Structures are given as C-alpha cells and as structure tokens.
Image (cartoon, rainbow, N blue to C red; front, top):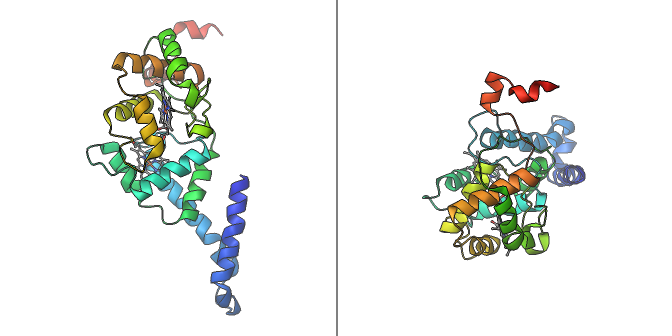
Length: 238
Ligand code: HEC
Ligand code: HEC
C-alpha cells in the first residue's frame, strides 16, 4: 500500500514534468491525464489475472500475497529472457509471452505491489505424500534457505513457500531438477535452487511438497467433489 502511494506520487511527478507544457492549453484536462497510467497498469493486472486467477482456465501460479521483492525479481527475469525463453518449458514460455506485456519498470513495480498486496487464496490439495518423511527432508535440505516455516530467507534470496499450491510447487521442483528452470548463466538464484534439487526422487519430492503445503501452505479450499456433493458426513456435526 505504501509503495502504491509512493508510485502514484512518482507517476504524478513524472507526468507533471512530461505534460507540463500541455497544462497551459485549456483542451487538456489534468485530472484525466494524471489518472491514466494507473488505470492502464490496473487494466494490465486484469490481463495477468487471465492466467493467474482462479476464475478462468488457470495456467499460471496464484501470485496473491507473494513477496514483492520476489515478484519483482522474477518479472525482471522474464522480461530480460533469463527465465521464460526455453520453448520446451511450455508453461514458462507462456509466461515469457505474458511478460512482454509489461511496458516499463514503473509498470513492473506497480504490478509486483498489486499482487503482493492481495490477500492469499485458499487452494485445493493436489499432492499426497508422507508428511513425516517430508518434514525431516525439509529440515535437512530446504529450511536453511526457505526458513523453518517456509517464510523465506531473503539473505540467500530464498522466497517464501507459503503461498504455493501443490501442483505448481511440484512442477517447479521437477523443472529445477531437470534443468528446465535455473539454467541461464545469469540466473544466480535459479542456479542455486537447481543445484539444491538435484538427485531428489519423485517420491521424496511429493513428501516434501505435501509437508510444506499441509504445514505452512495456503488454507485448504473445498475440492470440486465437495462443492457438488456437499461436505463429508463427518463435517456435518456442527
Ligand atoms: C498466457 C498466460 C500468462 C499471462 C498472460 C501471464 N502469465 Fe505469469 N506465468 C504464467 C505461467 C504459466 C507461469 C509459470 C511459469 C513456469 O512454469 O515456470 C507464470 C509465472 C509468473 C511468475 C513467477 C511466479 C513464481 O512463483 O516464480 C510471475 C511473477 C508472473 N507470472 C507474473 C505475471 C504478470 C505480472 C503478468 C501480467 C503482466 C503475467 N504473469 C501474465 C502464465 C501467464
Ligand atoms: C542454497 C539455498 C536453497 C536451498 C537449500 C533450497 N532452495 Fe529453493 N530456492 C532458492 C532460491 C535462491 C530460489 C529462487 C530461485 C529463482 O530466483 O528462480 C528458490 C526457489 C524455490 C522454489 C520456487 C518458488 C516459486 O515461487 O516458483 C521452490 C518451490 C523451492 N525453492 C523449494 C525448495 C525446496 C523444497 C527445497 C529443499 C529440497 C529448497 N527449495 C532448497 C534457494 C534454495
């Protein structure tokens, strides 16, 4: 919110400079001109939501409530082609297309702030695994960079894992492992994470994802089955 206010002020100042001369002419209405870039950035966020929301066919991860620094960093990577340039990684390539919609650094900052300030979204549980085994593995191999509770550790650029849905979490782990993410020579964070995921079996990945989502992940949303058939008998007690 503070950043949004700051950006608004910045935008106004920038605009005041660039359209200053027009202000003298009566034909330009300052109010309307100043509001435009914000309206444009908001319209852009709606375009992102086509893939990043749950209303339409969701193709990308839910970004709501992710950390602003991580969102900024990833968008910069997509924009510069450090991430999202490998056609074989189809979903990443799709986002590469999405990222070309971001027209300026200011718009990028606005979008990162917009997503970071949205409340977290509940998620359907999609990955099953042995939570106890996952916990042990997480503490040994992940906690140092992502925090004991998945809160993230910015000192080593490890993002929070608290907002990730199971399907996306598992998919990213497999991509890091196979080198489909974190391959670019300038992708420092990506390469660190790719190294951290080598040689982990699929079964262990499932255990660790199930543990993270269950313990500090998004709140559980009812599955479609529950929505259509109603709650299970045991939850009708209240
Ligand atoms: C055509 C669909 C599509 C559009 C439009 C799109 N994205 Fe994406 N986005 C994706 C997909 C798919 C991924 C996951 C990429 C992967 O698997 O590595 C992604 C990933 C991301 C990530 C990385 C998340 C993470 O956890 O690392 C960010 C940030 C992001 N998108 C922001 C945006 C923003 C901001 C916009 C609007 C300007 C946008 N996206 C538009 C499909 C899209
Ligand atoms: C040495 C530090 C380090 C270790 C250990 C590590 N990570 Fe990471 N992790 C990172 C960094 C840095 C990133 C950011 C990658 C980027 O910038 O693309 C990351 C990114 C991720 C992402 C992507 C999040 C997203 O939104 O797309 C997931 C998922 C993840 N790590 C899970 C794990 C799990 C599970 C483990 C344990 C098996 C682990 N990490 C171990 C440093 C680490």
